[in-house]
Image (cartoon, rainbow, N blue to C red; front, side, top):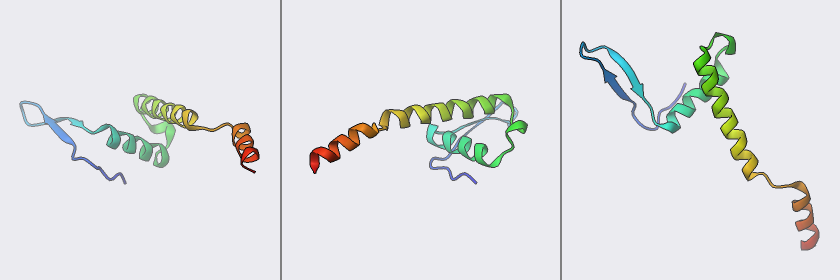
Length: 81
């Protein structure tokens, strides 16, 4: 279950049929995370598989930017000792 932080915007056509739901970027990522963890990958449509892949790639890039080299950590500890 995905808890939305912002209410989604519903878009209707002239006949009153729901044609689109607009989510915040944060809620969309939460939705994709839930799909990735709770769905059978093979049954997901290709566009959702692609969206999840892109989200995971972005997360890895972000984590890589925040990573600290082990040698730097050990060197800092030796200097502090």
